[in-house]
Image (cartoon, rainbow, N blue to C red; front, side, top):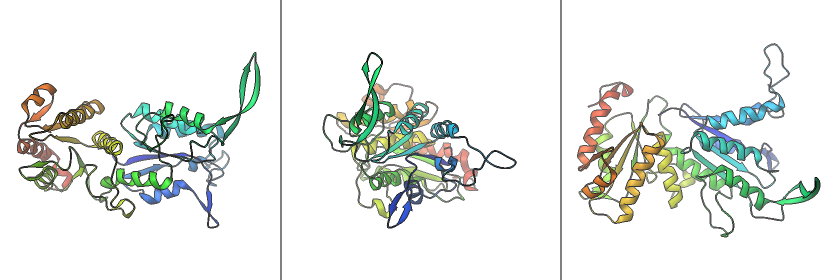
Length: 348
């Protein structure tokens, strides 16, 4: 996996007054998950003269960013990121910048993670005054309500944005509060936060955590047999979360699928699991997980275990499938021997 994970902070640049202090939402995101070898932030505030006094006029040894250069740098940073965290406040004048940055990110990395906090999008009493054509080259001032502005945002930004309950006439596809967005953000990154002294090797586990193999959790079997490799780290939306913010908070179905795709995109190996006896929906999820992993990274090693030969045949011959879980695990163990240098010793 390419490290570190790059996170671009998209949204308003103005702080809020909290208890007489200026509070930037950018700082709140970075405090939730600290930067380090595994995490790096692209913070567009650092390119603004009003925020970064070190940006002076062009001259010997001085940094300089012209006003019209901000947008180009912002788009470049968004395109190079693994994750875009967007925060569109209630008083955001339009969200055009966040729309463009998120659209660029979606085009570069369709399986990257895009988390958006969208405050109060359905309050049509708020919006912005713009010139609206009345025909014949004439224009008049009119209020463009938030509903229309943010519909445009969703149309361009695309998935995966995470749904909230809302009216059927509007695609409620973002978090309403920064706290909700930060909760999912921490869920998405916690499993990547490991010691800076390690050279990590990630395996994404696709499959329902409640499924068993010979009376034991299949995930426990995999972790027990492969966990002896000191540099191996496992990814799965059901694994524990050490953050106090997200204790006892369940992921909804869209969040789980979003994380599954993101984990597969970033992992070195994908290991998919299907039960010996399952219903059609179970096998469809299994096949979809394999297809998504291959689609996002055709060169990635995807190993799957499914004892149902009918399902194996339906998936075709161009997948690395095993009819026994132990065989799949054994194959990965052989493959991992080539990465013994990561742990400073030869793996066995």
